[in-house]
Image 1 (tube, each protein chain N blue to C red):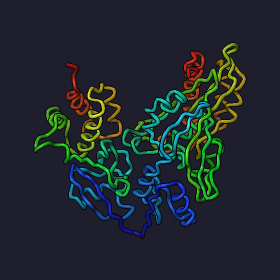
Image 2: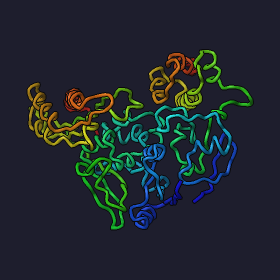
Image 3: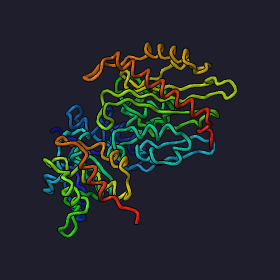
Image 4: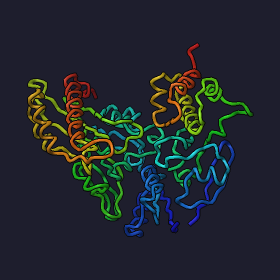
Length: 155
Length: 297
């Protein structure tokens, strides 16, 4: 049984035919060719597949595409504006918060959602928001610092 | 891959009708967290998905004039965590929801879905037992109420009958002098789904005597199902929470639970952890009762 769904991905509307059991990440990577979103654990634990659904984080590897029908999806490809990285992405580069890079899209999406909701997030709030994303290269210090550095300061 | 049917229900009766037609062969999908994981793990291969996630009637949080809090089955963990109405009526619930996995799971995972899964590591089951909630199910014969203490029957098995789905959960108002608390032990909160131990305590303390007039105790991660610790409640009810009383309650608890050993911890270690978390959580609940923190309404 295939079902036609509509997804708004990074501002563009796409139609796709999917099986009821097709996951969102399969549509993103295989149908739309958006391979920035990575897949790993398949259990909602590691966080590398994190995307935004209507501005809120979701694990795209366990979310069925039919459940995302009609929703607004943002992937890591959708962060940059007119070819320019966001301040958060720049900060990841500046702080060396990227090592192998596999977890990076998930961290970026999680931190982007946090900063949109809490532009003045405190360090404990940042650490708590990132608790569901795993980095296996180096640890979390530089990642937390990178996020903290773009927190809006009271002027 | 076998063919899978898909029904997107817009009303509860549509979902109930689809479940009746499927005769037990359908899987209900709400937030899709557990089902998505089980499908990826190839533990479940649905032949019919009944998607209830767009049924508006199953959403929302309402506090009735008598103080009863009603949480619709599709309410997300995040909504439970952030709702001022929930915090005012049942402060254990946001404390509990804060412990669930991580943000992106709380954004989509639903209160009713988690309860219907009856995962022994789940957090909401612990709270509904301690708070003596009522589970309201919709089925082909109409609506039926099941006490939370009788809802969890076996590993991943609830009292829901074939063709029924959980519609909402009702929490009776806390008695004057009640204090509640939720405590959890987890190696790593966001990813520990096998080795957690959780305790929910609702204690009603008589101000004059300091005695525990009434108590509700729910535990998670200490057996094949979420546990209603009846014997431990009995050991505390009517007593003043003094060290000797609590020591005895911990002895009763150790005999009342049957934790499963896993790749991290032995059953005996989990028994010990359960007593530690009970002591701490009970102390917090009693302190809150004494301060009258939860009497404000």
